[in-house]
Length: 70
Image 1 (cartoon, rainbow, N blue to C red):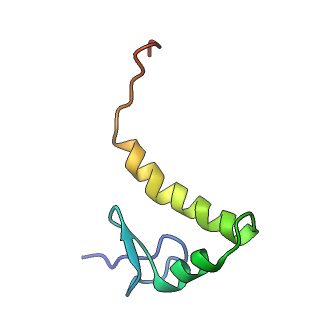
Image 2: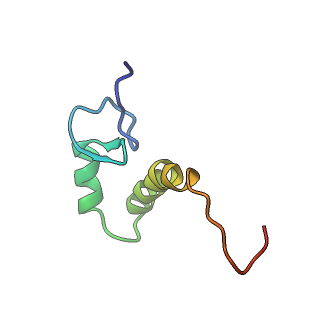
């Protein structure tokens, strides 16, 4: 079985939080919480989350709009 890695720092995940089967280690979690909105660090963390978790969640769903043909 493959060991899980943090989606931000890619280090082995020993503790932290799991979101939809993806993990963020305790160190990265604390850095996200303590970073200021609008800083480079904050944007980096948000982009890592968007690339891994949000993309994963949306990819499996088939969205169709009633007003527009596909």
